[in-house]
Image (cartoon, rainbow, N blue to C red; front, side):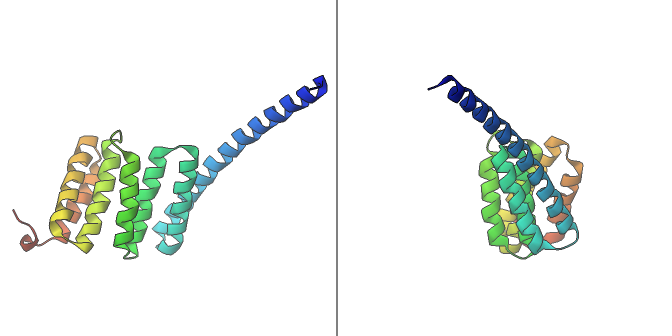
Length: 168
C-alpha cells in the first residue's frame, strides 16, 4: 500500500475511535436522561410511559456495561409494571435483574430486588413466598444500612398481611 494510503487509513481509524468514544458518552448520557425521564414519569403516575423510559434506560446502561445502573433500572421497571397490575411481567423483569446482579451484588441492590419480588407475591400469592422474599430483603437492607428501604419493607410486611396469612 502506498504511504499516503496508510496515512489515510490511520487517520480514518483514529477518527472511528474518537467517534466510538463520543458515541459511548452520548449513549451514557442518553441512558441517564432516560432514567431521569422515567423517574419523573413514575413520580407523576404516568406508568405506561415510564415503562418505555425504564426499558430505554436499562438498554442504555447495558450498552455501556453499567451493570448496577441496569439492575436499578430493571427494578424500577418492575415497580412500574406492578403499579399497572402486571405482577407476572414484573417477576420476569426481576428474574432478569436478579440474574444480572449475581453473587457480587451489594446488599442494598439485592434487598431492592427481593423486596420487589416479595411485593409481586403479595399480589399473586402464595403468602409464604412473599414473606420469604420480604424477610430476606429486610435482612439485606439492614446489613446495607438502608434504613428507608428497611422501613418500606417493614411497612409492606405489616400492612399486607393479616395474622391468618402467616404460619408463625
